[in-house]
Every structure is written in C-alpha cells, then in structure tokens.
Image (cartoon, rainbow, N blue to C red):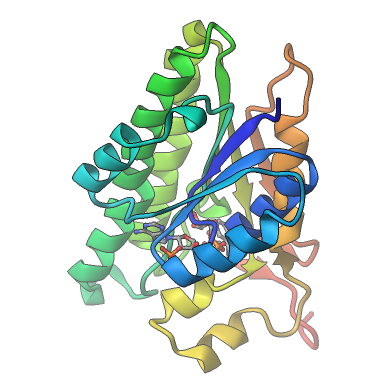
Length: 256
Ligand code: NDP
Ligand code: 8X3
C-alpha cells in the first residue's frame, strides 16, 4: 500500500513541485489550495502515474471550512503518513509604520493560524494510525531565523512557525510523530508576485542578477527528510541559493 502525503498549497511553487516528486516516489497524495482549476489539472497530471490523488479546495484561514473538510474526508483517505504544511505567503514589504492591516491579517491567518488548524486535524489522524505515527514537515523560511528591514510581520509569522515546529516536536513525540522544519532562502515561485499584489515587474526584479533556488530544490529537501530511516529525524534545514548569505545579503551580477 502506498504511503499518503497531504500537501497544503499544492497549486503553485514548492507545493506543486513536492506533489510531483512524491507522485514519482509512489505516494498517494492529497493536494489542497483555493484555486480549483489548478487543483483539477494537477490531479489529472499526477493520476497518470501510480498515485491515487484527492484534491481538496479550501482556504486554510477558515477554521470551520478546515474542520468540515476533515470531517468529510473519505474513509479510504483517513490514514495520512506525511503532512507538508506549505501553504503560506508574504503580503507587502513596507516599514511597520506604513503597513497595511489587511496584509498583516492575511499573513498571520494563513502562515500561523492556518498551519495550526491543519496540524490539529492531521495530528488526530496520525494519533489513530495504529501507533505508526507520522511526519509533519513545516515550511518555514530564512525569515523565521533572521528579521530583515520591512519584513516585519512576514518574519514574525515565520518565527512563529520556527517556535511551533519546536513545540510540535516535543508535544507529538509520544505519539510517534516526527516534526521537521525546512527553511528556504529565495526560491523563484509566485511568492513575490503575491507579495507585491500581482505587480509582475517588481516581482521579477527580486530574482534578477543571481541564481535563485527553484521549487524542485525544496521538494528534494522534503523528500530527503521524509525518506530517512525510522530512527532518524531531520529537525531543521536551512537551504539557501549559493549567492545568498543571509536574508538581506545577496550577491547580484555586477555587484561586489
Ligand atoms: P507560491 O505563491 O508559489 O505558493 C503558495 C501556495 O500557498 C499556493 O499553492 C497557494 O494556493 C497556497 N495558499 C496561499 N494562501 C492560501 C490559503 N489561504 N489557503 C490555502 N492555500 C493557500 O509560493 P511558494 O511556493 O514560494 O511558497 C510556499 C511556502 O514556502 C510558503 O509558506 C512560503 O512562505 C514559503 N517560502 C517561500 C520562499 C520563497 O522565496 N519562495 C522562501 C521561504 C519560504 P492558492 O492560491 O491556490 O490557495
Ligand atoms: C521567503 C524568503 O527572504 O523573501 O520566505 O523572506 S524571504
């Protein structure tokens, strides 16, 4: 029987690359996100291999919606081995005194509260997994290790993910549930497009002049973490582009 992975935010970027890689590795996959059309086309693509695929369209910020989705989960999907808490975003890059509370709420509600709502539901399933436990992988960020100018609330949400990863690891140990955090530096995805409210010109400039990571690089790290032997856990992994030394130091072409 294939193992089952649930990936939040599979409609783009790191989540999409991870779904593709885990399908290659013969996982059955639950893909989630808000964009129904993208979920359906990803499902059709993944089902060409050997995986069973379930797509669930919902907003991780809505606690009632999350509860309903898990209450109605088909019996054949009530065994989840791996959860990838990937859905997340940055909104805005402004000094705190010029910030926008809609952006703040979106980030806190998605990156922190959404991750909690999903983790709670999946932990119930993993606890009932005949003591087989499970593995939760939280996608943090270098922004959860260091604060950078104008990153304020996004950095705070990823610092929260860092703290929650440590706390979850302690609390879930007795249930045989591993917890890993993966903290990427700059990865070229739709992340900056979302951060800059669909300003594609501004988003492009983020990745100009150096070789950013691609989503598959992070999918590879996730695969490494979840494919370790039972007695080995990767607690935390910081993964940067070679040209990036810290969240605010990136060597761009022409700069010294
Ligand atoms: P993308 O914007 O490409 O993907 C984000 C995914 O999150 C989408 O599938 C989106 O799906 C989903 N998502 C966002 N909000 C919600 C919501 N409210 N409910 C459900 N799903 C949601 O960005 P990345 O792939 O880069 O980001 C993935 C994770 O990686 C995030 O947690 C991000 O913070 C983190 N990260 C990214 C880095 C980067 O440089 N790109 C670096 C470090 C960490 P949909 O819109 O369909 O709902
Ligand atoms: C995304 C990376 O450096 O833009 O988490 O915050 S960064």
